[in-house]
Length: 146
Image 1 (cartoon, rainbow, N blue to C red):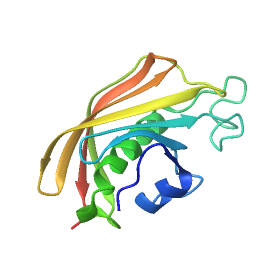
Image 2 (image 1 turned 180 degrees about the horizontal axis):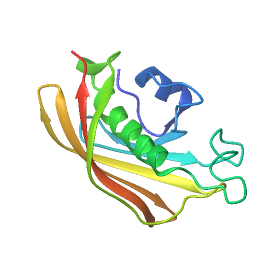
Image 3 (image 1 turned 120 degrees about the horizontal axis):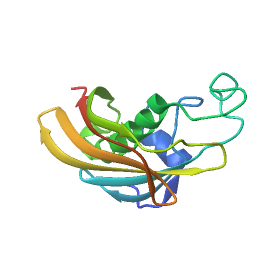
Image 4 (image 1 turned 90 degrees about the horizontal axis):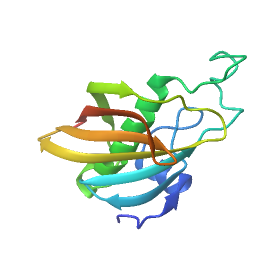
């Protein structure tokens, strides 16, 4: 059964294999299975990476912003019945750009539109924004385990 958005972490954990501290999504606010997802993540001052990145100027690492975009995209794919219980492995990112720093207290809005699926391999265009301002973008490639 495909959940109806919006939904929170409990339902996200039914779809994704990720768990805290590596689950980077708080809520899915829009979902078109196999096509599009919009999710959010409140960046918290006590997130595990901030003590080391950076102690005097906390900044969410770019690689974790990319991972959050990939997790959002995985929801769109893994929510489909034929993919339930599977893992979507991150296979690549193209044209990745970072446009602004993401700091504690800000909410990331993560959007991924799946634009191609050929067998288990797919691609999606992803963005991360804060209050409508682009923080990062890229084209993600993934492989759904068989």
